[in-house]
Image 1 (cartoon, rainbow, N blue to C red):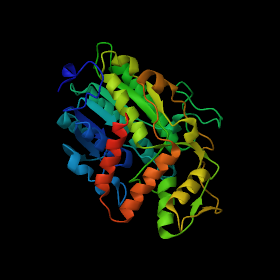
Image 2 (image 1 turned 135 degrees about the vertical axis):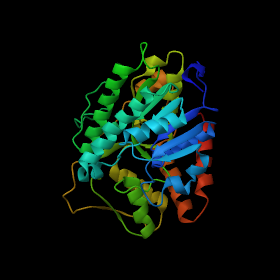
Image 3 (image 1 turned 45 degrees about the vertical axis):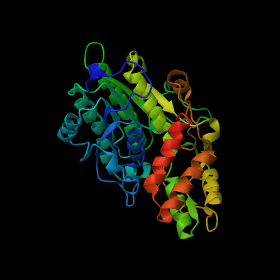
Image 4 (image 1 turned 30 degrees about the horizontal axis):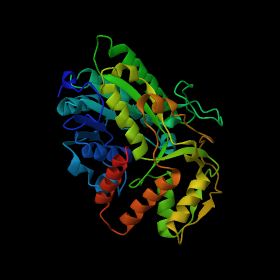
Length: 365
């Protein structure tokens, strides 16, 4: 299907549509692929091998739902261009990235190469592909210059970043805006390009190191206390399906007759009640897990800088896209613990993942 053949209206135009997801072997990318499959899209993936063992990609059998599974590094421009040509996608969701703050301190150059130049490679490949009509570049809530404000950040607030990960994602936003202004729209390539800034996502199948929820669940399963580096740090927590619903809604609007009006940045965060301290989230997880779960303070010191308070204002997505969060924090944590308990028992988490997606979509997600 070419860009000229796309439907002009909204209403889940996914059935039969070719969609490329970069980062499809990752946690959020895997959930997005399964959601797109449930909506009837033909999903193509481009990514490195799964970043963890176990992984959502393997445990939820994401590969069986793909039209094409291409492995490679987005820092390789020729490989990215070949993958886009082979998929002939109408929509591209760009999620491939180095996603961890602490890893960015260990490998800052690799982080900038993946998150900035990798994005440039994807958008340059799109520029050479006539099929692409919409691109959603997924960044993060950490793109904002953090002033430790009590109020949430809006899309027009200053971009920045103390740690290399945050700075690389802010640079990704700037690079995307530059390439969009230089090469897309107004008689040039017709693809509409937007960026999406989501809060801290949680959900089944996240096995990454140095993330609160996976760290908690690993410790609880071993019968050990989870040790928190910054228990007072406040973050906008949300189930992974919440921002995915936002990405889908954003892409649908980009595909619409007035799609150019949506080629900008959008926040996708929880209701204010979803903004919670790390310590509170860990205690709620421990209560849901039950016997053997406990929380302690990490007193070792020497940890790299992390923001103390971070909140998102998602008013723009609510008003312009009709998107809103549907799961409160307790529901999101319960779904996550249910998934990981099922995995620990050796149950069919591929079926459980698809069931959680189906129920979310049925409720209007």
